[in-house]
Image 1 (cartoon, rainbow, N blue to C red):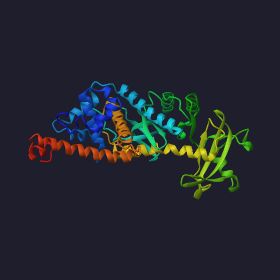
Image 2 (image 1 turned 90 degrees about the horizontal axis):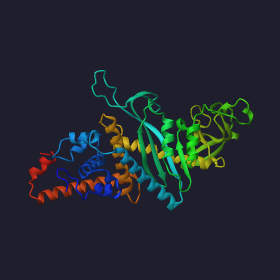
Image 3 (image 1 turned 135 degrees about the vertical axis):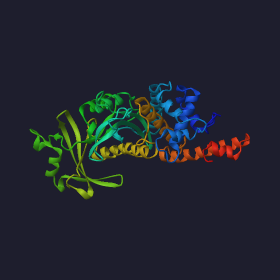
Image 4 (image 1 turned 90 degrees about the vertical axis):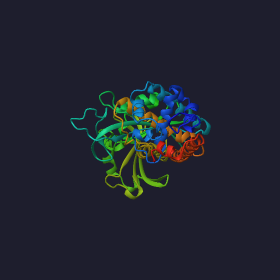
Length: 402
């Protein structure tokens, strides 16, 4: 047993770290603290504070956790590569076993922070102002470029990186992440929103052996037969169409009217473009959405939209991570600490999805199971303390319940 906390050598989290070989990159005390932070994230009501983890190690001060994230000598880059390898092996293995395609979903989200005062001595590093499309205004915080890997019903985080426009553009970050992936064993698709739909990402996707499907800005120019010389913006073309020009398709439980175009773009010789409206909002202002496929022009409109649906898990990941894993509330300041926090958060997500939910391989179900396991281990710890002679008052003081 590790002295001073409810985490023991038989803890399911410790077993996972060893089994996945992630534990190879930590000393035993470091692995213990990793397990503590993961346990804190799993607990209901986690707020992103280091004190949440400190509550699980009553004999030690919360500054132990803060120093571990900011100063402890472990190589987060090595751990990140090991986690990526683990996730790729799992997703690629499922694809090989089921013959189902691999989806690489790329998107970004903003973790808002409070704008520091001019007198702040230690503001959170790497924060800046970003345009929030969700709120329709500029907000302050971290913009996080994220990659999720999806196959069948399994969704795993591959990368979370802070966007810093002084160092690298989001497009450059996306290209690098695509290039870091092995070729898919069957079909593979890179799925992005309209921000990433550009020539550099198209080319990187093709070179990596994947097919690209993404959202497409409706102010982009295309060249259908009637507008071959000067072209026409997609949103303007939409206004020229009639009911006879569109088809009704069903994607999942929803229905859409669609129109397709196959031809050149300003930066591409040929692509498949799909214009789409919800069934109840055909031709209504602001309801048009466009999608692009650049590598498989024989794909049907229905197939394109069904493939694109697999981008949705990254939105679910953002929502679950912000609500349950502290992605919106982490209270660490240095860039190193923040990167390490994200890494431990991804390991926790993988743990809940891979280790404790073997029947469903879903994070939300795995989180419920992990919480039950954590409570069970806490009760076992209390039992062992009483067997060793600790009084009720000792245990109440240990858990700060006296």
